[in-house]
Image (cartoon, rainbow, N blue to C red):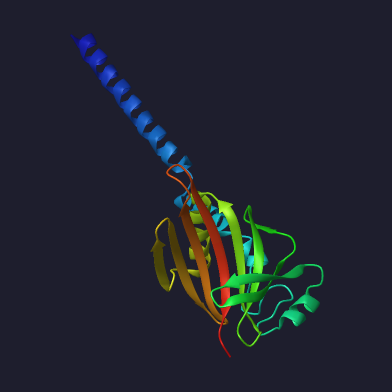
Length: 206
């Protein structure tokens, strides 16, 4: 009978020892987990990496683009960027207009653009326009998302539609005038849709 008491007491102590050991292991596992701050820092670094874009270094600014400056004449622009740009004629509803474009394309965030320069009636540079010809729908959306990251929520969203062509334009106010991102969708056939992306800085009229 006395032996039975001792056996029962021994079993109780043994079970208590397992329980205490289990608690210690769980506490150890909790303290070994990485702190929440480390995870937050990693997420912040990832977010910063995603917002990095070549538009910051290669795109137009309020001062212009490369050697091009607001208000330049065609002759001044050609002299400022010799060999990099060339003049051409563009048909408009009023006839033809003189324009200037880059001789070679420029790649920004993996997309090839040709940079066009337009001049107002007085013959002064009023717009720098980056145009990419045939891109995917996802690429167009990526450009829009990039500029929302860089410039915040657009001040204006405009949509235009005419038959097979749809144009979405987002605009931001800029110290120099207005910054625009345009995605043009043209349905060439029931199976084929072509997307065009344009990024432009329109200078404020003097």
